Image (cartoon, rainbow over all chains, first blue to last red; front, side, top):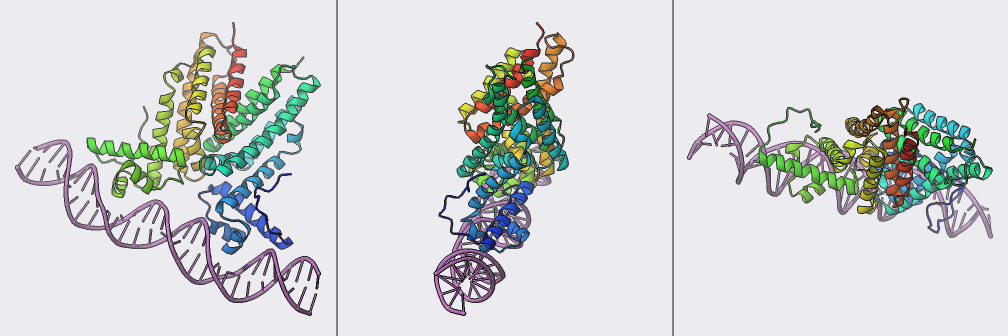
Length: 209
Length: 209
DNA sequence: TACAAAGTGGAGTAACTATTCCATTCTGTC
DNA sequence: GACAGAATGGAATAGTTACTCCACTTTGTA
């Protein structure tokens, strides 16, 4: 699904090693989502994952390398959680279902945490250039999936030929990110709904017939 | 313009004291914008502002109190920088000028830093409840200003009576925040433009004429 | 089954950071 | 111009954290 963030020659991992590595990454991802990257010490990760500090440094060169692994892990998780809908956003109905799914996610987690990718972005973009690049890749994958659906609508003739799938997909991702940030701050999904609905309505208003 | 975040009995400050306090806050705001809250130590603030640690603790109970002061400082700065346009967003033309202003700001600062309020939000929302509340207030002030303009358009009859200024204002703020986050990550304003333009076009398409 | 490589435990370190304390100097007011 | 309170300087501290090191155990393979 996605290539590993590390380009290191990566020493071969045994079955057990892979499991430990994955446990470290998912634990770190969870903690960083809850408490932020800066609020998560490696000691926290050790305790929660049940590993020793030498293990973390056995699998990752330093904290930044772990963070990069967390980014790709979260990207996969976020995109995965939206499947299969995200793979078929090729109708206004599908877009509305997707909207409902996203709003539902936020409610489930009591409006906490915002977007797992977006919140990492806010904290890391100016601080770690490699992280920024990884996050950009994550957003690109997300946007590409949305764009594919809208493109299909246009190809099929549901949208006029002068519709711009790229722009519309970007606008949807923008509404999603902004909506999630405001949901997190306000503890209320109305901003997410207003943002997504406005863009989806706009798309609906362009549909032919 | 905005009440002080601190409800402390606040000992009277002398002219010099006020100046020092303000220097600490604006310096901290600048550093935290550049390097993030977690990436800014009080030692950094001391060195940059040219004050000693006792001074910081003379004016603020602890780092969190300083952070809250930074939040209101940035809110004032951000809203102020959008004046006088933000006070008169009562036409599609004004909305488009405002959009251009915002896009211009990002270009000026080389797409770095994102939104001064939004980036604080991403870092603090889950970590400091009081900060979250202060940030929510900041977003509320921002949204209220936008809403006032759209409300004026409706009252004047430029928008149909079933238009929802509240919802539209929220959608604009959402597009702005999402757009700024993606601008920051991608080092490119096209997402900001796509987001704002889509919402503004939607509003334009509703105008009565 | 032997052995090289991978995995693990855990103590140790050096640096950083928020916060405190106290002595000294400056400001504004009576 | 004297005095109380505000402002400042700077050293000290206690806790945290990323990261290192080395000894020991487990795993996979020839």
